[in-house]
Length: 78
Image (cartoon, rainbow, N blue to C red):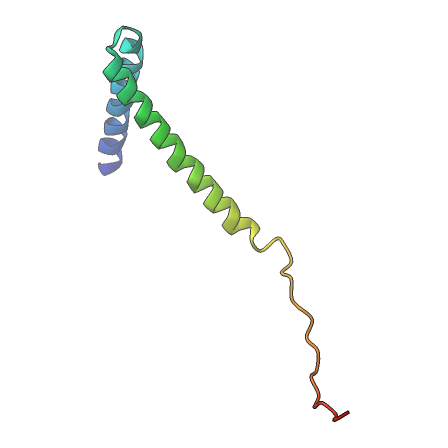
């Protein structure tokens, strides 16, 4: 029941987005600018998510650099 309502809502949002895209060439400059800002914001969020997921997944692929550990002894007087 809830899944069908969710699919209907997604379909409704897709239809409204398609209608906006079809009317975009005749839109006013303010509407074009607002739509462009939304598209850039959405693309930025998706890109940052991809970078974050890629970093988390590949973090374990690279060997970690460990510094040399040397035993430090007491200094002898000159």
